[in-house]
Length: 210
Image (cartoon, rainbow, N blue to C red; front, side):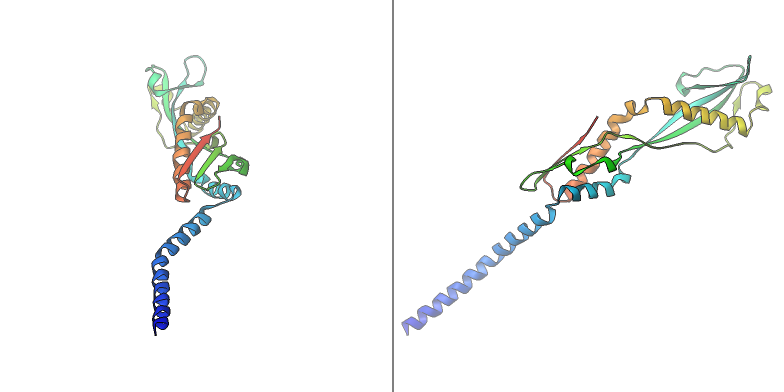
């Protein structure tokens, strides 16, 4: 009888032990599953970063004043709005040039991704930012502000387009990226850090190459 009771007690103890270990076992397995889920290969990380490339852009609007002058010969001048002074033989045409900066993620390779052995840390080296799109306003309805009534009749759609295109070409030759590059880099770093942390990485380092 004592043997039977001992066997029953042993079986009950085994069952209690199994139930006690149950939550711990489930928690451990869940953690292991989570680790495996975020253990991406560098090539997979590259693919995910490329999917989001269109979201990591910085748009800049550059404003110019197109000045049509006919003192001696007809010509188009360009000035920044802050530096322009009123003249008596000018027609002023406001111009806006739109620039979009981003990253050529096709140049990103698995070699640019470093992942720690425990899959908790990741470092990404991004290509340098570049101009990826640009255009200028085509709204020809903008009225020219003329300071000589004799000039106003000469400012038609064709001249407005000439002024806008001249501003567009001038802006593309300027080193705008040198002025806004810091902001472009910061925007990319913040975005990709957030993205990679959402994939489960605890420590994320995003470096933008010069």
